[in-house]
Length: 393
Image (cartoon, rainbow, N blue to C red; front, side, top):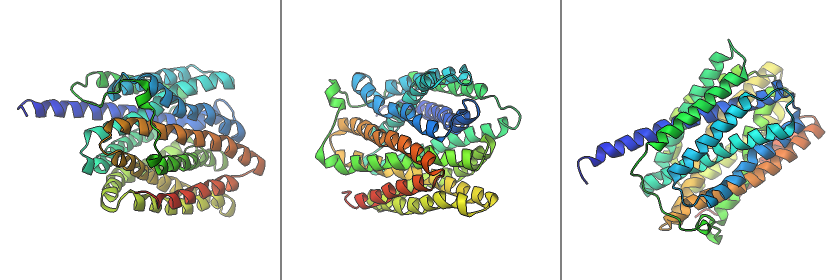
């Protein structure tokens, strides 16, 4: 290896890390504001909020189609495209008026969300291809910690900014700028090598031996809604929390996550994907019970404290999803060209389940008038994931 190789590798890694940080910062702002924007600006109820999970999560399926169509682009170029799409969606949200209509709202949600979903897969794929096999979970944990630092920065920004200015348009403008800056940095990356795909068919991988991974992704799609949609909605609509309050809770989760995510990466290497996934299932089952019953059984102040604590723990447990990514990378073995297609196939089927439960959960919430049934039914999927994880190789 020549003497100038190390500075070049260092430069590539600095560019990648800076770009991923900016992209995750923009994505964190998007997630933090989404439910409050729908309630405060668009005036939606729980049923309409659940329905909007269709355009929000549909890009999880569409990104699989996009990656198949863009088989001739490597992971870096796909990430650049993802950042540009997310920026366009953010600028679209910036100019929306109140009561703009579900169709217009859905179109901009799809645009921003498509970029965000492509980004989810490409970041994990970049880590899986650049890290040594025995260190994949460690590197992925470090990358997730970087993403947490970005989310932490976004939560800190929202927590401070909303004490003085409650204009959503400013936040979406900043999100769009962060995404464009990330795209510019990624365009400067040179010298990285990824397995080439000659046709779109090589981006579509279905094998029986990957069945456990795909099953876990389906169940995780349901679990994901318990946090990203109904957890946020519980905080906003039932407990009346403002963006600054949720931002403070995520700030706490982010500070803790800076230390726990690398630790989770180490635990996957030390104990294996199966044990970590089973532990995740047990812990989430307890959180589902707290989400379901705390708002109805406790005074408001105590309920906010309990649900807020669950929110923090739920956020931290999301990092255990790294076990699924390292598992599929491991069982792909020498077929390195199948890692990225498998990750995106998992994202697609994950989002089929996510969309379905987003809509069904919103209807159940409206019919029952509370969160109990939504979190208890979702909790059954969490338990099922624990049993399925016992079949991981």
